[in-house]
Length: 388
Length: 230
Figure 1: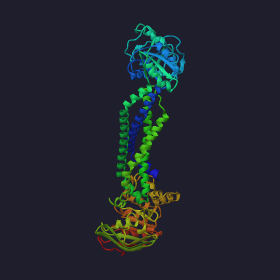
Figure 2: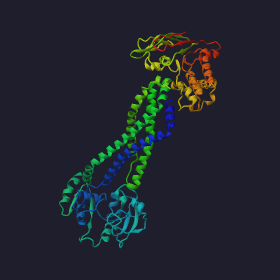
Figure 3: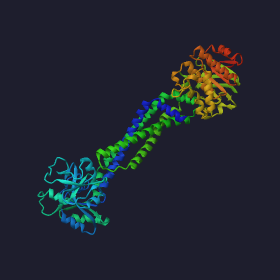
């Protein structure tokens, strides 16, 4: 009977119910999406640096070197000698030293000149075609292929810098020889080519006469290497070691207040959602007082009335939770499709956030039910059923 | 079945209504009379357990239970099987159909079984509103709503029926139908207290009961004096 009454009560005022559901759902979805996508973003940032213990670049800002070499978000400080990279590779503490040469782009994607080690280092596998065998061969990441619609055999030219506005290197077209599967890492947004391609395109642009790279991505053999190599590298003229884990942590720490503001904002949204629920319940109660008095007169216990009120708010929260789930999924899809293509979004984690959000909302909803419930339980049955 | 002795209800520090003493057995009915504010509804609220009987304010024994010793939940338990209540406001819940409204007391007690449903339909049939059973109450006239309200009070076959102004605002046909059903219930072994200031009730009762059920009368004084059966 209680469930039937809840269903009828809600069905009798569909617009008010829909409005309350939408207000709750929007509040919950915004809060959950904010907190979840912030976590996704942090994980994405960490994932890009996985396996890279040290970035070796030209002297300058360590953070700038990390942003340029790991995330392709900044310009490099300069170039380093390939001979230095080879020397580092020979160090017994170094497991891998992968030189990369960057500077140009196509359709907003970095063109990275490097060695054969680069693609396996990022866990890349071929979806079609082959790996680069000669200068000006290009293997494109999954997101680049989707966005630029480049296919195997197509040719393109790189533009200087990261935007599409840089000078095009028209004389040196690249040819797509392979397309990679998605990895969720920065390689998805990258065009990989032999280091020689970069030298060829920039022939005469450098003052140096010996082969150069922009960075070397270093993977140490163990924690001792991670601890000792930076000092060794920094002692070399023209070289600077940057530890991505440290630089990223430093960067994130300086943005701690942003994370706090985001969380406070999310909390405000949840509280606003619950306030709208409280308002809806009080409004419904005011309209339904005679009905509740009648139920008491017909033998309904105070416990049953409490069940009715609580049940109604929980049904509202459950429906709002379903809608919020849909909205969060839509936000995650939009984020993955438009804002950050290639970002790995763990639906299971999202579900956990949703369930946690729902749990908190259900608890707050139960609290929000207390004032109307107290009012409901103190209804003067005699007065309600006698007055006209 | 019902014994009321020296019953008093204090509604303010220095104000009380005295209901005196009276008794009611199965197969009997009482018409409670009195002007507005005399305490007719209050007496019904005390008897159905909605209002508590205050300490040292007399005794009420209903179906073997002393009401003043009952807790609030025990008083709630009087409804709907010991006491069937037809409140003064004969409204029905608009969220439910007429039949669901009639079945409401049984449903709340989780006893809306097949037998009760058949009884509810039979009541609606005898009240000439069976064809409205599956409609929402908004479509009912005042007279039809009053009949449905009485059917709801009777569906659980209570020992005592309390009807608060059952004919108020009803036309002659509906009034007769309502009083006829109450009389039939009393003739079937029920007990009823009707609170009303409708002067036509006694005549109506005599007409529909064919002298097979008596309707005693209690006149409640407008202030402070004891009432009692005439």
